[in-house]
Image (cartoon, helix red, strand yellow):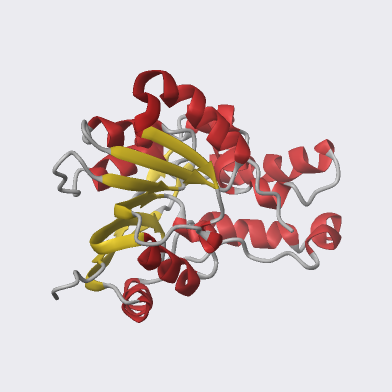
Length: 265
């Protein structure tokens, strides 16, 4: 079973691109201010805080698979928001909620869930009739250059044994497939699209810390020693430094919006 944990402290410091994208997604959501909303994959709660700010009479349930992330979010949010925020350690493929929420918000998470059909069915069930879904995740050709380099490294004799049964950890879907899956789950008013989100890190150490903690931690967990993990990252940093521009990540984001039909639809 893959390691579900993250280094929450480092993620909180380096996830600036994810927070920036998430703020733009949140700006698309129209709220009354009294809804009950899920932040699906809340991480350390940076965007959960923004969501709570636009729900002055509402409530947010932050869900994350990582206990470290949930604990960090609790530390960052409870003092300011009290009972208006609840943090739950939970797998999105095993949601225990039914007809419980007015909306579901999520960014930079759904690509970590490989079974999107089951994911969307669970989200649909968790929403009240008329409830909305607004999300963004990695999609399409996301991080193609980096992942091609990673695949080449994994095949080298020094590393191949460790990745013999390794399973690609992401689902980078396209807008058409995602729309079909949302429709199959029962959603209506479906909108999906793909957009570029090119990201450049400032220096070698920034690139290393970001890639090893935000993107490749499941890959690096497979390597048995610190020395092997360092060597693996050393080669990726060396290649990224030779790029023009250097330390560039070719991110692509998949946007999705949909609604659960109201009872009178």
